[in-house]
Length: 481
Image (tube, rainbow, N blue to C red):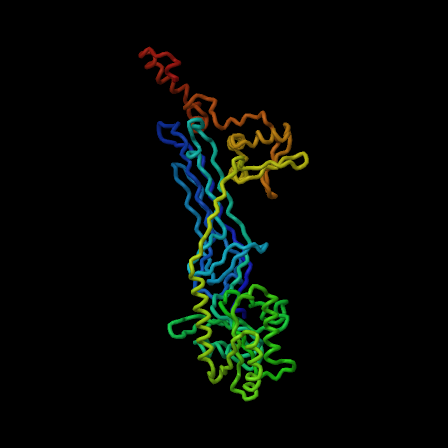
């Protein structure tokens, strides 16, 4: 049964924004109360949080699809819709997030680091928010925007100061058990370690972590054995410690050949050339192994590497090794603590940046840009007035003028959006949207008369008030005003 997973493909869907409400205030004796539709609520986000209590991505291996709740629609009486619930996903510190194409998104190293992986859609405006001095009675509202849909790849890279690398059964698990409180599985057969083990070591006042990476073999960087799955776990280490088995009886194996083979795999993996190296010649409690270690140690020192002859079984030689590890970690932390001067580059918006682009595609014209594409998503195309409002916004932005400039004629196909769900229009520059100005007298617009209340009762009201009008000598035009 799988208990450790360090790479998953995660499919996330943020919540949709709630639709705005098109409503008219209805009170007794006030049939023309005005628009009072509330805004829709924002959709919930998908948020990743680095939690030190989490050590594996196993949860997302079993449940890779995650979704946030959508915002609620607005209501009458200026009631806004409730926001959608955010979905919090806890991941181990050291998780690297990329998109499905391998583009880097974030590196969640420090505990508590948060990342909004997918943003919820914005809620649509209600007709109360859309009303203005020119548009007193909007009979439409904006739709909520859809939440982001994303496929992300999560890779765990263990956050450790020292990485132990070497062939299977070289004694890495025994070494980490001897220098820390970690208790990995130890046996006398290869590939005993199937997952990285992490141990905490204290040398005087310095505390650091050591990672026991599953054994490497020649060809690991190309997919052989188990080591290629865990090479990523040594990328964050301040130093690498080669653990070499000096008591192996396998033909063709010797300490120098093992060292060269592991270095080749690390080189093929890439990105580890600047890490300091220490070499541990292990199993010195075996007489033949001690003789071999003492024989090859000068050759390794000649390569510029520090060598330690140790026995994980008897703890011989561990103290000098621990002090060497501690010194490397202290130097790495001191270098990381040096202040880094950050340069902030401010890129001003171009003077001629209109916020959209128009590109001719054969006989059609494609309009792309954040604003026009967002406005299209917010439009209810079943409502003629909402479509007119969209046309007014596009004209005010300059889209219509740019289409004419590029040679668009009446009837030309205009595509707004870059995706498959783009909206297609027939261009008609002479059309009048009419969404901004009401053509009827204020207070008598059919959208504010309680679904024809004034039309049904106008004659009845005239009979009731006509005697008073005659008594006060007020002409009919003034009374209607």
